Image (tube, rainbow, N blue to C red; front, side, top):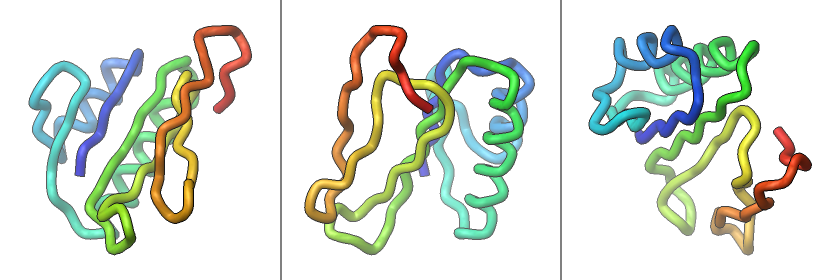
Length: 99
């Protein structure tokens, strides 16, 4: 599992460091069960409630691509399903960025 953070509060970065190894600033890695991964995601959503940051999580999965993607927060990038494969679509740098 890889978690990439951008512009998140220090408290969320600290929480992520409890479960994952920060290999580079804002990039965390670890290997956990589905249950623990969901628990980590719940903490990410709680930690992002009052900020403009965003988080992307990628993990190994049983599908055509071999991985799944989940995002939270406002970002210029959005995961899009393309015939069973998740691709990242760039929305641009304007003020029309969606959650």
